[in-house]
Length: 498
Image (cartoon, rainbow, N blue to C red):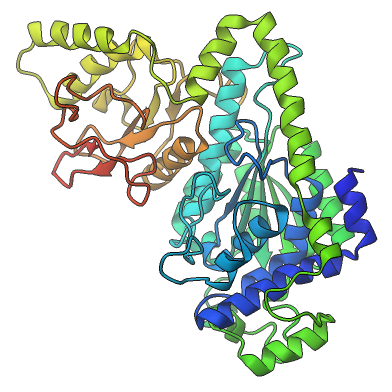
């Protein structure tokens, strides 16, 4: 047991979880806006995961081999903000106190905050779990490319919190079906099964057999876990970790708004402040006597993850140093990708490739022109990956250096997505956000059935003199559009443009 786990044992686990509940209900009340129900309902699950299992370093949110955590039910954003503050990320209590206020980073639906610990969360439900599948796929592909015997330099998990809404959205079917096929064993999802959505109890509109559904996908499913019992949660996570060739869904029975005695278990806690009287009653119910936005020293100390985070990253850095001695070329390539850098002679190579293409230019279909470009640039960019939603031969996305990935061998660079167009784009966003394999989807044909990904930090398509991209767009970044800085041009037969 880690030192932090011992500390968590000395301070009652429920007290640690109640710190999340208190911060969440107080911040939503102060903003007079937000969703307290999910954070209060999932607090016990979050406490066990973040204190006992999640490998991360609050002092370095960009550590390459950190675990990824995705809050797919992103409306419950105070859960994530509370976790980031409590474990030692650069998110002050002042930010928590000013939840959903202009000028503060606690915006309410944080999509992507590099350097803060927000990998991605989603307002459109279902996108988060689909992004997480992409992150888990990126981890498996990188591990296949870089790991060698005795040197698992890519070895981390992707953890997801999701709710009924995520499972009702069709995109979750596409993504989770492919996750089972590709055997993404390091993907572990927690289903917040509280039977409540904004309109009330979901029995009138959501009667799926979720356990059977995910078993049919090829997932390991751990059903009927008490989401308020730390020991049961730990046992479920241990079972999930032991399964390395199937993703896992842990179905947690929870009470939305847990601790609010008059409103818990009802839709009234989902998307509105509890109100001063109910918050006072919740403090009594939970045994939390501390004023708003005040965390007692013993609880703050038990939550602090910075020491463990430093140990985690130091251990990995020592492993990578030995890896660099044994496999210097691989280590150099890995470091280049981590830094988001292009090959050293990229500008000269790109100029020559473009000149050669221009010299042989002629009339051709845009999909053929896309293949010509891919064949020219792919040999120089081993991080280039892509695929098609069952239109490989039509859209000509498989270049001469493409190697298909499978559930048993993910060392390649080409993904057969099947007829899963929406899932495909969301997976590629997750792969881009994962970093190292840092890429952004482009759509080089009139059909959304093809996705091609290139480095978002790349200057590969920019003119060397004017620094604008080859498609005429300014070389800008906007994390609120395409992650990594790309945005759709909005034209028919469109590509993503800078």
